[in-house]
Image 1: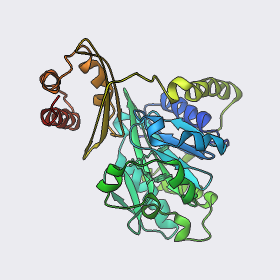
Image 2: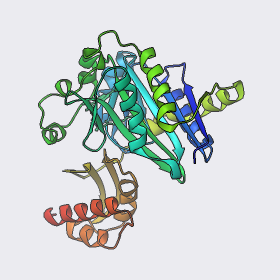
Image 3: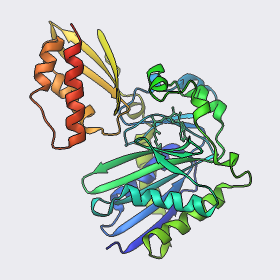
Length: 332
Ligand SMILES: Nc1ncnc2c1ncn2[C@@H]1O[C@H](COP(=O)(O)OC(=O)CCCC[C@@H]2CCSS2)[C@@H](O)[C@H]1O
């Protein structure tokens, strides 16, 4: 049984510090503890762990306007944050990790405020059929988190202008514009504030788990530790990573996400490969470059090579099968 519910708010809006605090809480979370962490970022595009920053975001425009680009540890796609957006993170050990239960805290809080929501697709929460929350997931050993956004009053104009959503993605979601399919909760409750939301979430957290909620504040030593980790989240290497010179690029959209592979070929063999994806499952995507390294540069050889691998995780096994089918269709 869980023994402790901890509630913590970030009082700063620097995305790198906030992501560092999230990671700090992840590794400090006790076995029988569940933490609810609420935070806000000023004008930031947050991309998924395996995405290509240049492809997902108009980085120059964002930086010129004083915004930030950030990369999180979880997989999934790119989202836009400003102070009209509230982020939540549930941090808990694998044993008590339960996405449905965690989502019922969000649904319960909004129900208390008079809003009815529903879950849809792989990671969205909807109001009136429109997305107001995107969710993503991360696991490191027994340390897990589930985080998401809540759009209260986000500048949709800016959201649409900083995010460069691929035509494939728009097509797959059956819509013609990003702006039209996201919604702010303020549209439905004009007086709703971020503080109301925070209060409702904290109350619902205690109700759903049936335990008292203890608020945590950070001491100076902890703040220092978080600051040094923030440097990593702020670094060019983490945000943009390496840029490989490539000769061939392929992209395909699957039900579980879009994949782009860039190949660097030398003497007919794959010398390096960079794989980008918004898939929520990150393991297979991150393993791919290693699988491809040294293989002869032909779709048939890749097909045979990938056939040598398997995964015990059924979702990853499905990803692998889809990638093999894709290679069968390619002809080079
Ligand atoms: N703030 C926000 N909230 C909800 N939906 C958004 C937001 N910004 C953009 N979008 C829409 O979601 C799609 C991307 O959807 P997609 O499903 O690709 O990705 C996600 O949802 C990722 C959620 C990550 C949540 C983390 C929680 C803390 S740090 S970020 C984008 O093209 C827009 O149409």
